[in-house]
Image 1 (spheres, one colour):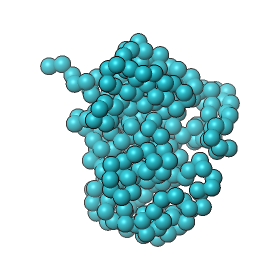
Image 2 (cartoon, rainbow, N blue to C red):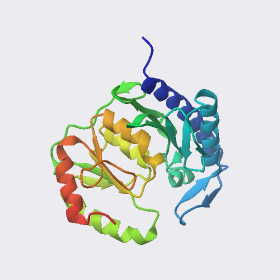
Image 3 (tube, rainbow, N blue to C red):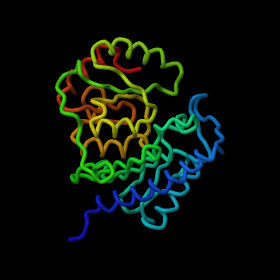
Length: 265
């Protein structure tokens, strides 16, 4: 029996994410890393972000020439197949620059129904997360699932802060109100990694605003296939503008807590 299109795209995403991630990790270990800024002084890009995206897009051009591409560092290509790839060549560039291991290569594919397949590779940890629609999620080939936790007070929650400096006051106030009602709050600085950590049970929830499609697509399919619920802050369909990924049994309470603590910026 031939593999599904989702399984095929998942395998492609894994292969290209590993190649790009290992290349970037070698660069990081060499110490030859230079950075410039984009939308704000905290929004960084390095030569390895660009090299990673070039490697991935070149690979897709050979394997899936009819697919569309959207990449963080400017890759943009229309397609005729109905498949669009959303690429974050290094998610967590600030972590990469400072040699903090929480960065990843994120490659996700969508069709007319939404996320179809994706891979998130965390080179410094040696961890490959991937999933395809209706085929489950894995880390390094082993099936993963979100944590079975029904207590908000026991929830390990993760968030992120906007590159928009003007909004960080709102985010800080929200965290200050929430931290007393959950086990603890983390901030790792890479949305794709955060979503995968919900998927494998290291976190109970993750929420953040003002992301982009390339931050979300691969992590969303991985978290969803691992049993997490991925929505906006009101429980409606997720968009990059508002992302909430939770283990199912605390979702409603967490939605209420976010609203109580300040909703959205």
